[in-house]
Image (tube, rainbow, N blue to C red; front, side, top):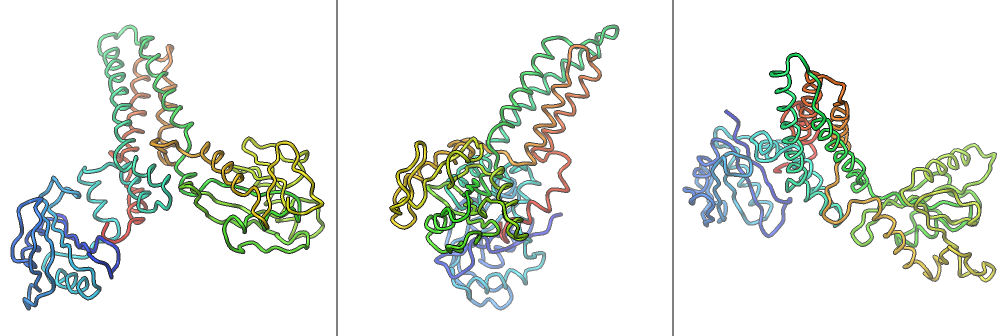
Length: 425
């Protein structure tokens, strides 16, 4: 029998209301020890909360009762919605601590029980973890699509299609003992599904959404990179002087613009140098340019690196000796603010190209690896392959889908995943 666990499930006090959750086989009995009686399932009611030993009044709270398996964890649950003062919360938690059979929950343990009891699958748990950590509107929407089961439903469809193909391969094994060649229609269907999985693999990934679109500011020394980055973030994060080579290493600054997660990267000026420390910075800057999702180039247009998403900036446009911006370049001044709004608009447009679209599901690295595994297994289904080998390839594809959802082979992942959750979730 599972332990009965309890924890504060809302933010740390003080707050207007704090929610304390109890889940497990003794949850209802514990609720009765504290509140005297429980309301009907899924019904809220006000009760006096008293210490189970001293009967001291602790608080007046709203009580909710949920009966397993139709609950968030699949177990019996009681929730106390208390006043959110520290003393109140501590008193109620201490009172639960003296009830026999209860223990404090570990981080993520409520959600882990939801997974283990079949209330959510692994992709939904990953989405919920991302939802908790979401800092921008784009991150929230993508995480919510996962947490609400968008990927799980798609995987269920794919798995059923593979199961149908497996049944056809097994029939060939059972009834065509002389000729175990696989039928052309089965090969075609396997190829179509592999192509569909590849389309998902080609979509923008969750890692870019979580870490931010890397916007790299590059150019020669004293091009105005650091000044522009400081202006965009609204603080002096990068050192600015008139001495060439001031920036010797890259500086990364997270920033959200219009709900888009960005990672602004200021780099060392690109030039030949005999200074060993600066040379390291130049090498790193060159690598950053190659790894950029969006490149903001502040040098001469004719020496700009090749990049698929590039914005050419004519910096320091306020200086009288700078002249007009070359064709295709954007005049920008970090002193007057000229062109900055237009620059931000262009950054946002290009950033959206590497982020999931509105309502799209973004898969993470683990999910992509398993989709790739399933796709490769399906591509190994060929006309010259006999039905026994085809059946095994299809089994491999089903196994990849099962590990995607957590139905099999995920024990090594669970501790790592659920440790990302806060206490009480």
